[in-house]
Picture 1: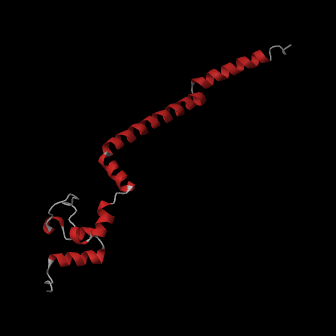
Picture 2: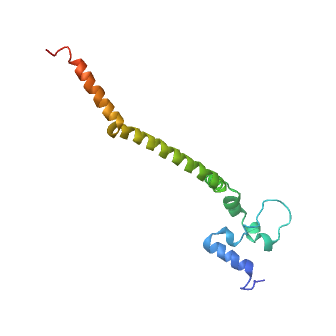
Picture 3: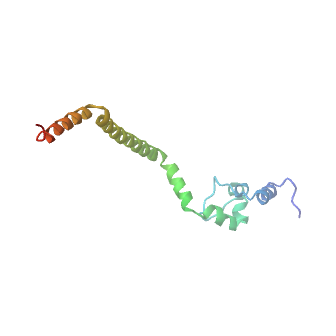
Length: 129
């Protein structure tokens, strides 16, 4: 028996063969790996016909996928931590630049110059006639 050319399962199978995309023959929204009866209309034709593709694309969990899912799931927390760390880093940099700026341009330079002049006078005081 030859199926009609408008057979939905046949069209999905050809779309999968042309593209290699498992979502054409497997409804990923309702997919679960629990046992029991699974109708084709709910789970898709690929659940029954493409066992090797299911093992490669659905059941396989890579560390990259798990890390990406974890980051997406906790994005707000990671964003908050990143912003706090950036603010702390900016504060530390500003304090260091401000300290260096005071050392070169501020009060400390004047104090150093006075101290240096006083040391020079004291250092050469015994040589003066």
